[in-house]
Image 1 (cartoon, one colour):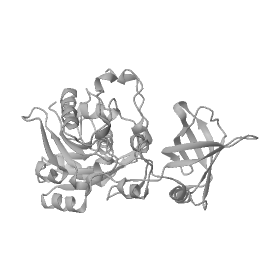
Image 2: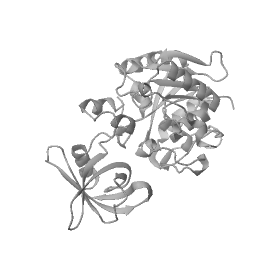
Image 3: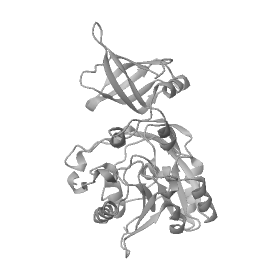
Image 4: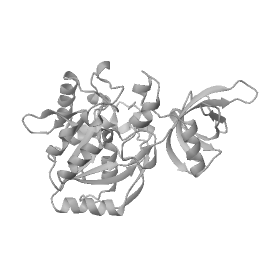
Length: 358
């Protein structure tokens, strides 16, 4: 499909730079294809009223790490050059794939040095491989847990570009850009649909008889990359690592067997569930990397309802929600959201999307 079909104009004032406070006070746009009215304006706190006892919410419990590194690239016999690195996929206990800026002059075997703000910690890396588009593989001088600890000291929260361009990261972001149930270190971007949940909302869902289950997909920085191709068939997705446990798969299959609905909290949970599902919709325990690209024409196998934030124009995520509800439906829903002042992107408001009939 033509990428420009997924474009729309978004005013700057609709881009959220801070989350709603409290988190569950964010607005919730409910979209039900084929219904009249098709869209309804609500609050995230109203979520339980749209679900049935026995439905199951599926959350991505990945935890954002400080994956933004600022340092210098050492030049033999020359002047050091500032470099900014965003980690996006770990491939070994000391190797991360990353996007580096400026990236054109980086070469294999180049040395990089990153230092904490107070100067107490230094982390070094060697460029093990240079790839296209500023992507590199970095081999660090620390491994496993020692590398994790060093990143906590040296790294910064990797705020999305549309926020970082307008303000610097601060101490609030370490809490704001993390779900309350995050537990598995490895993401470099938050599963932002989950940022709206609070203990108060969890209590309300429990009282409504809504189940909670967890999967893990370590979100990569590739989620922020624009689609540069003119046709969706020519776009290459970046891979992300995740897993669905045997217990989670069995529990969700039981939900479906008794007539309950699987409600994905976020596109990351959805992409993982769809990667783990067989053609007839049975979820299997799953572990590995997924680069699944969902666009209109895709047949959904596992997910019935999707809760998600509002996404960028011409992004793979807007393509995904267009596949879920229909392109015309989502164009109309986003036009309504923009007109009525919904807040977009990672710190913005939410939507609850019901899958269109097959």
